[in-house]
Image (cartoon, rainbow, N blue to C red):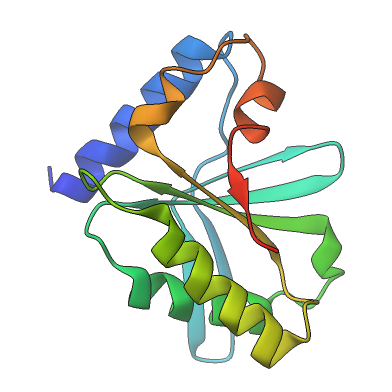
Length: 143
């Protein structure tokens, strides 16, 4: 299994064990004509579709492209979605991702793009609380 696959499996196991068997819904793909993009995991809570990308390779540029494609391919109300990024790269500074996505959201989408949040994988195991809402409150969200 690749590093990315290993990290995706570890994330799913951690979420399921830490948050009382909470079930993630798996990969989600968005397609239009010959353009498509997917996320590693997803779930829906309180009418919000959470799209989760597990970043294993310190890939801020990839995440910006993924954010742009998600914004372009999601035709429904963007307020019904939230793009969540879980960084697994050791000592990764999540501000790098936040700054890049804030820039794109402001410049391209006039602050009306998908909501987004970032957390480091290591921080998830330190979260107290036994429900998925406690996880969501520990993400650092964009402006």
